[in-house]
Image: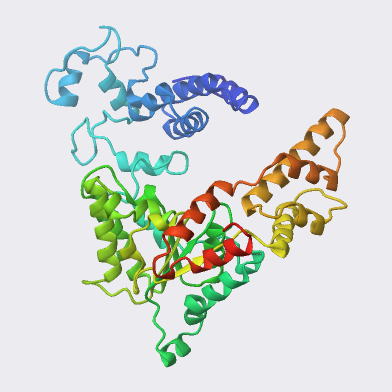
Length: 448
């Protein structure tokens, strides 16, 4: 048994230096030797918070009986003590004059102790240890009962997205907002009128357009508008390298959505998930696309109340079967922000920064043809310039118009490559007028 003044001194030292891992380990060792296991476990947990891979702490947590104290004087009948503990002679595992690890653990009530109810001496109550460490260490395994075997995390999928955004936070894009309202926002908010007019919540809406123009932001804003469940998934959530896993993940996704209807499922970068099967030589990927089509057709299930929202930069790479009525039967072009929208994007990204004298109308004129992501990068670049200038001056200053205009001259628009591809599609691959809205925009901008 360690003298209490020594333990008090070690405790005071740990309080003075809480991040000293070796000192905490030493205190935990002394506490285990003194039989004060609960306090030792708390200190070992604090060690693992600071050094998650600390092998010594893990060894002491899982095998506290191995922390042996100073040799204790053997009892008078030490010759047959091992037989009384185990029922048979035990091989020596340490010095002849010291207590064996099993005996030491038994004396301290550790894993080697004989249970009162006659349990084997080497049994260990792991559930008790887990409950003791629950507030300190993360659980090794999550959701063992009824969990999804691979891919989609059902617990995460059950939770509605809480983004703190609404469509009011989306600058401009009035046409997009109208289509979203008509497609499913108004029907979901007014179930009685939906029934009266026979408006179905089946089907989906495909948002497409150049990158960085707010498709994903719109989806997150829709999540803030709805009281319905909102599940967002990407290629990495669904596609698995093992044969059959991707199909199972897709099936699980739709099962979760059906159980939580009304529910909106958002597929980000849907061209990666639903590629044209004619372009796929990879059989597992073809099977994943087939499974997606099968779930959308709800042959064996009812998709009523499950609405699909998807985003892509390359709709021409999406399998045409995904875009027929009943699947993604509405296609909506999300264009670069217009003048008022650019002002709104600037205002949004500067709202939490120290600014003064900003002429939003002039900035909007200077950034014609820029995407929302480009404008966000301009604001970030201006903030960097003001920060560096503040460091040189030795005092902070506000971000001004000059900083933003300098950033505009430094950041070039990123949409040129996309519009080159879109121009070819509009001219030579506009079968059935699928891209008429894109053609109209390109003509307005005199790009064709």
